Image 1 (tube, rainbow, N blue to C red):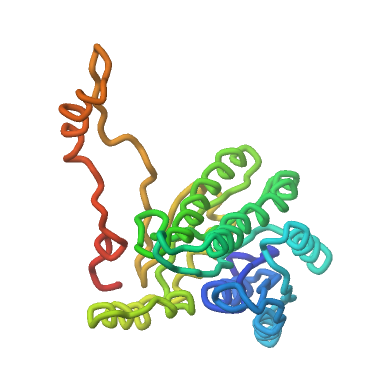
Image 2 (cartoon, one colour):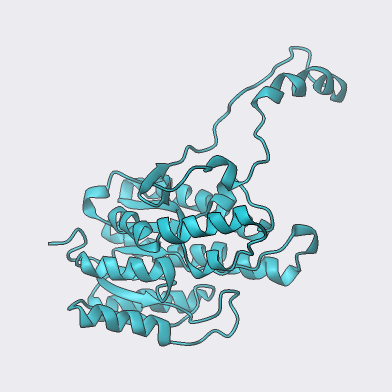
Length: 305
């Protein structure tokens, strides 16, 4: 007996990395799986190779599970509707979607092209809209459905050279929360995971010094895609029906629950504020509560567990 017995799950980006591990584990836990992967490069170029998705589907079938493949793009709404229909046609329904599909086009913001901005937003943010919007009424009608979307500490905390990726990933966290709020009465859940894992996306980050090389080795050996898949699959299980609207991270064997933005301090002035009084009194009184500009590595400086 697996935690996903009787479920049908769609996994995007399922040909590699986290998506592949999610698809394999979902099948191992009893789900029938639609494995989607565009088969493109890390930057989203040269797409249209059905090989990666079909290879994972074959691996599932060889292990005794049930799976079909799909090589359409999450950026195409009609194609995503086709994925949902494929799940229904092949397996008789759909109960959960895991959406780690993504690309990277890193660069300093003052050098970032419009094409690189739009391409990353399209795959991550628009892709998350497409998979949720195309399926949400199905989930509402059957009063059962779980989304596992993927954010990043680049969006939650920040990393230099990833403004496009960070903007998309923070938008996904907000999208997930509102889906969870609106879906509560219909048992439609949505959560996000900010993963730490060695994948081809992480492997693309340039290593500039010895400290960076050591960080990469720690991630490669101690933070794996299969560890992220454990939580993603769990969030689609019936026993997790009371978990929705949350932001998680997985870092090695550590599962982290993030807080969400809430007021930390306020200042008031009965006669109202002016630019001068804000500069002299308001902002200085808040300064002790300002967030620093440290990147993800300053928040997680310790070895993975």
